[in-house]
Length: 160
Length: 236
Image (cartoon, rainbow over all chains, first blue to last red; front, side, top):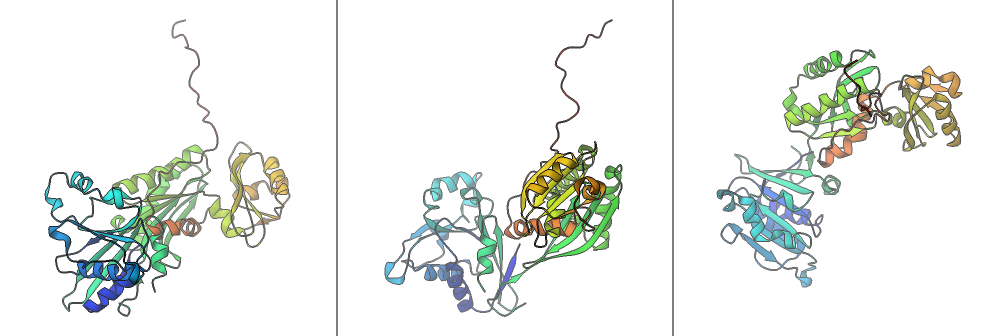
């Protein structure tokens, strides 16, 4: 069942990412979707800050996948894998390219965030969280969070 | 929309069907983050018309709620136990709609929708009519958890097991029919699986977006028809 969150500013988006990070643990898969500029990377930056990982989080469009190790000095415990399937979607069998990325090697030990990954990476784990970000005319963002299996619904319910 | 950053859970529309008893049931319920609310319901008691009644009732509850099949987020079906002919109507209807609409289907033991709501602090025997002078039965503890069954037995055997489990009250159509044999006070309601109870028992799966389940009927009995063990001569 889907939950909606309204985010008015970029700071709100970062902040929401940080709160969301509080629910995350190794093995989680998050699928981000939404138009270009909606704030997928901004949300991931917030998640990265909340998880306390190293390195600047930027849009991974041109590097496809980036691994951010935890920074113990910032309380980091778990690795964040940030991937972008945007370019992969153009090939005839994007799932084979996802396999080439070897995400399944790290998915159990890391939090994996995949942008544009719907229909391509669900096979990596049984349960995942779908996050869609839309921008409204007044520039606020509406984030829809859809739990798919596992205990996502229960975890999200603790977010407020 | 609520204050920035607060979660607002959307409600979803769920179709509930049960054809495990003479009460052919279709209902539309709204599942929210904290509960289940009935939007429309049709129930007709007729042990011989499941096939004729169920689909029009599904149509009717959708019309009552001014909804279309495409609005459904999930389908919940009572898995029985129940007699072959009626039970399969509900499960095939639910499975077909689930497949066509591409929404998950979730199964609930139909007796749970009688015994769970009836168990208010004391152990209860839930029974439905299995024909052939037998009942489908299960026992629930005071919190509504099933602790025995579902099984199909004579009322005397069900009564014996219920006594062993310290049951103090019986509920369901089967309990009404065989009240004298069971020797237990019979609660009037619910007599048949309640649609909202079925939905409540599946609500957590609906909320979690759990993977849909194949709807395997709880027939509990072997079919009467058996494969021939020897060839019958076709010539005199």
